[in-house]
Image (cartoon, rainbow, N blue to C red; front, side):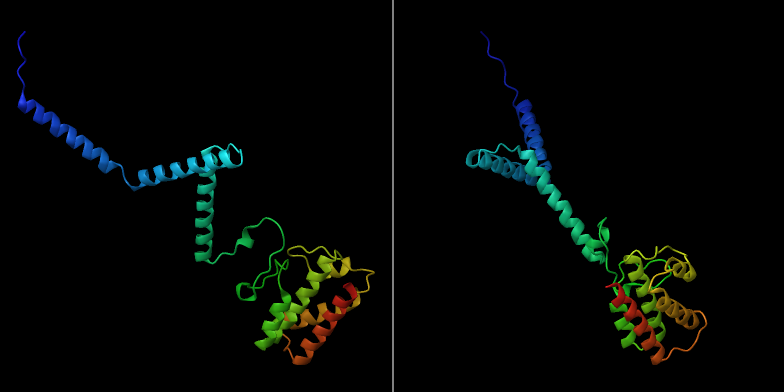
Length: 210
């Protein structure tokens, strides 16, 4: 039986190719793969713990879903905080208070506004015109909350008065409406006495409906 000759050059080439492939695979095994293996290990440990201690057979994938869910939720919360967005603005239910500094008053939205805060701020700034406007809109808000009127965008003040026909608050609200229209639309100069009168009429309506 003849012995086969051994090709040392071929062996060296094979060793070099093996080493190159080995180090290439080791290099491709990056931090993401290491973290994945680490997490898979602990998800498995958690599953074993619940199975042994509590007899709860929970698949490791459940812990994986919970973990990544918390991660996504935490990142979303952090992004919203950085952008200055409050979580309650994303909730589909409940009334949301709008801070005075963030609200530019329009004729379109009164629901959920903190008119008490808005009025106090306008008083501190000596803005009598806005004090009158806020009291009037606050009265509308209360009447709407009591379902005495149906607040709608673009509805006129006269329509609200018609809805209050026969109600005890109509006369006082009519006075508030006339004062508000003269001051806001007629550009009548606003005095401290006018603000006090508007406040008194508003307080009467509020007391009657509370």
